[in-house]
Length: 332
Ligand SMILES: CC(C)(COP(=O)(O)OP(=O)(O)OC[C@H]1O[C@@H](n2cnc3c(N)ncnc32)[C@H](O)[C@@H]1OP(=O)(O)O)[C@@H](O)C(=O)NCCC(=O)NCCS
Image: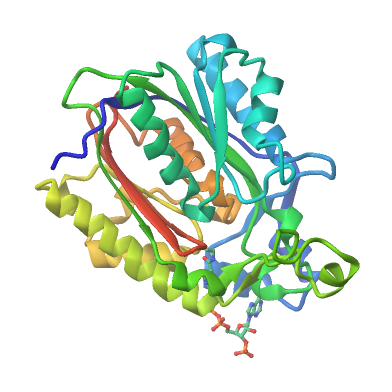
């Protein structure tokens, strides 16, 4: 069964807050070193939002840059999907806040929670509406202020993440040879216990006790997540290539979720792809969760790594566990 969706990415953008936090700065907060962070994760620095700057602000900036570059008025947007695990608040949805800030008065929208796989999930979901012809212009945004849920006393997590957002514009296509060729999505809920934020939800509503117990921060068993990420990203990538009759040699570019350079390199090795075909920017941004893949696409376009007709694979793993991939032909 073909999973082709008659929708294509017609524009991409990103936004990161201006403040840069280096590894040296983290050395002053926790018992870590620039050498350890670079060697074990590939991260050199990350961007950090100022207090009062929220996920919707980064998302709106990314969307504004995108619409401006395309010459599309905000009123022309039909749908806004925001992938995030750090919404501005429990409700309303960040998509509603973005709709208002953008002045996208004709758009509906919603948030999607799939952690680091959020952007690829949102891309598939938004593309279904565009491909069905019911929406003409969909903004798919991945945005997170991860620093809002980081414990700067936990060296095993606080060095990994950064803040950022990226967005793509999805529009219909009637050409079989471009747009989304295939997608695959997975949930393995038994992995939920390895990466989560327990406090502030209906199970453990925010209280002095939940704060005292650090339940409003990320908790992670890094080695477990690492192993799952390497295996799943490689599996999903191979599955999509194989069932579409391609090999990794046919790929022009893989844009993987940027969680750890070693995860990306291990996946790359399993796929047998050369360095030049793997988009990597983790050294500058760290793991921005919803933002990594659109920021990767943005940087790839800016660096001239993508051209019309290129076969591109997006692949991600995240808390949940969630995982997913999208295979597409670049359309501009
Ligand atoms: C977190 C992660 C970088 C840790 O790297 P690792 O090589 O697995 O390191 P380990 O967990 O085996 O820890 C090795 C040692 O380094 C220490 N360590 C952890 N963080 C450190 C830091 N920032 N600085 C210095 N030492 C650190 C550990 O305490 C441990 O010390 P010990 O042996 O004395 O107990 C890695 O597991 C990882 O990237 N996991 C996936 C995380 C991820 O991507 N999450 C997002 C979801 S998509």
